[in-house]
Image 1 (cartoon, protein in one colour):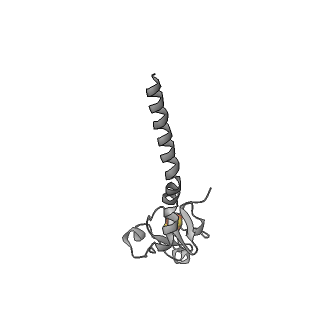
Image 2 (tube, rainbow, N blue to C red):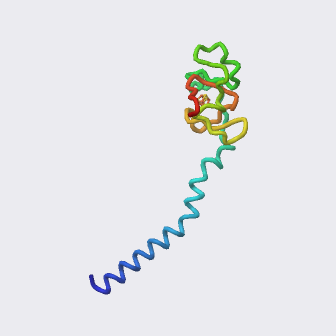
Image 3 (tube, protein in one colour):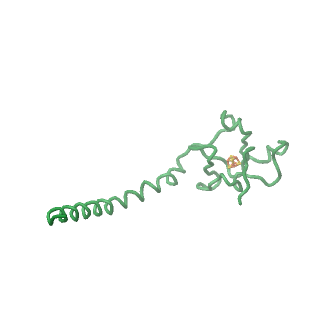
Length: 112
Ligand code: SF4
């Protein structure tokens, strides 16, 4: 490898490294964006067809007569729930919507 080619490679590496370091703060902002957005998400309505498909209710007590419901099951203790917003949180079954912490649906998954 010639001196000129080594110098080019070194310069190319340094430029790439500097660019990578310069973009780190931006990457952090992008990665934090979903949780920052949780406050702005709409609440899932019980009459939403997707909610009705899995018998979702805002209050688990309303599911007491459902054959799949077992006492104590709540969105708040479901593995698919992420409590990002107090009484309402995100659920991977309903991307882009919030479900009630005291809610329930027939997809409920126990936390390991
Ligand atoms: S999957 Fe879990 S968190 Fe999501 S709506 Fe059903 S019970 Fe609630």
